[in-house]
Length: 74
Length: 272
Image (cartoon, each protein chain N blue to C red):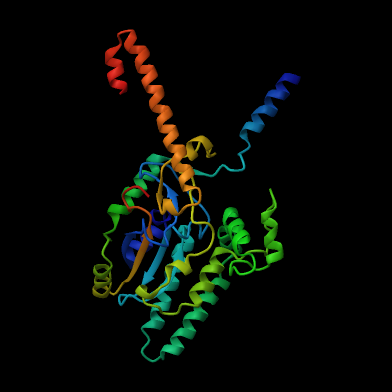
């Protein structure tokens, strides 16, 4: 009985998330999302051309500064 | 990662022209671990990593409607994109003077912050290491600090900032944008605008266990990108990585020698 209780306590401890644990999106899922993002929209890398397209379509431009590439390492 | 998640993905796709610029090497760029597209991903707090990521909403003439420093959660990002569209209506209003437009711009930025829910403000809490950086380096001058006496608590080991010591990142953003009405993108001072917290930001996505905890040994050994040479301790880190590489190579040579003495040539070639 005592041993069972100890086992249960150990299992409960294992089930408690650690303080620095965060929800993780696995590589396959993340990779799929990156592909959807990079191919699902036309990403400009030239600001004047993006602004020109904005003027033509009447849309605002979302211009992102980032370390790396939208479809590559970031 | 928030851009690929709903509602941000559809809202961006349907309403905006999108583009990006790789800021690696830019004076205002920070430092991050290299994260491959096939690697893991994690969500973080709004405004985290302001030096590594900035999202501008621009009018077709290049005027900045708003700018989001760092990561922003998908739902909060859409809300800020809508603010950019509303501000654009003011910018396009030919019956308003420039002074009137500027006043509306400031008001709309402040009003938007006041509509943020408590949940959004919780999503916008400043990262603990960024709080420490602000308290350590500019306790009396930082515009991120609301109460310097309370903020100084984070400098004590193991202590967290009490509520009300620091602004949330959504407040920092709207306060700073309020001071920059209708600037052209070319004149937008990205360095000052994104200047809060430490330049190094990394979530160690690929150095985590299945339960999401960071493997510290793997995290220390990972390659970095951005303004790596500007990072404090850069030389020490480079020496450590060189030592690790040399140790690895010595181990391979020893193992190779052992196997070669026993005539396992194919395996030795494959190892090398």
